[in-house]
Length: 369
Image 1 (cartoon, one colour):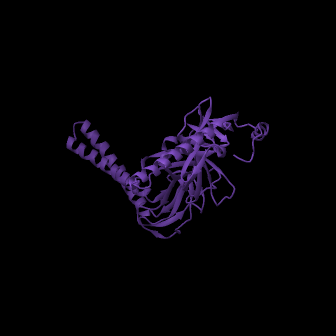
Image 2: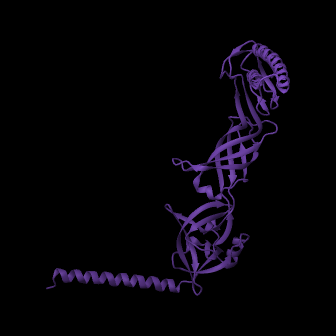
């Protein structure tokens, strides 16, 4: 009588023998099967550029809110809404009659003290006057000159001028109004150049450099494309968003762009050498990407590689991991082969290959990629 343990061992042995026979049969079948015709392409180095898109808000090259430092009445206004003004041009004149009167009084005092100083110097030179009198006269003249400069400085505060060339905004005050410090009189913007700040993911940092072309569009001008230049890149990275702030400049001779406009930006990174294959070589299974590389010569066999892809462009896909330059990959016939199958290279695609013609001549089906 056969024990249960012995019976189990017999069943297990029969299973292993059957499995071995299946494997051997599969290998014999594969060995006897003619190689699958495929079209290959080389893994090549390519100067890949990344197209980086971002949003930014336009701001003027220079921008200020025009205010006053003193409390005084407006005597006259010397600009119109939206007027182009020059640096130093008078915008608003405040009442300075009191300071002008003080200036005239001090100037008269200075004239008198300078006359006293000349007489004192003459007396001192003739050994009649004392050195103390001379020092006093000189001190009085110097003090009066200082007082005059102080008055002139206060008078200048009554003249509100443009700090740079630009365009004034809307007038917020009227003649005769009493204004106080920090009251807004108008705004002034230098619109000759517009700045647009935007955030770029830090992964692109090594591919950025000043001088790169930046294209921009805005809903205010549908269909228009404005061309600018990447002018500067921040020296700090935002630790929360992991982005770096960049600034582009756009020439604005016709003043079409205005501060506050939302801009859609696009720029291409500087070229970087990378490995690429035709898109048709790569296939996805779940979240992973694969391709078949051709290994060996007699016979050549398909070898499945797990790859990491990067940027796609013009029928090419970047491969950052999984293959090396000079490898050949299958670009047509991937569905007809499996890992380890023998293959026959019907042609090498250089980008201009007539695949349909090659397949017809080889008697292969065009419908199976």
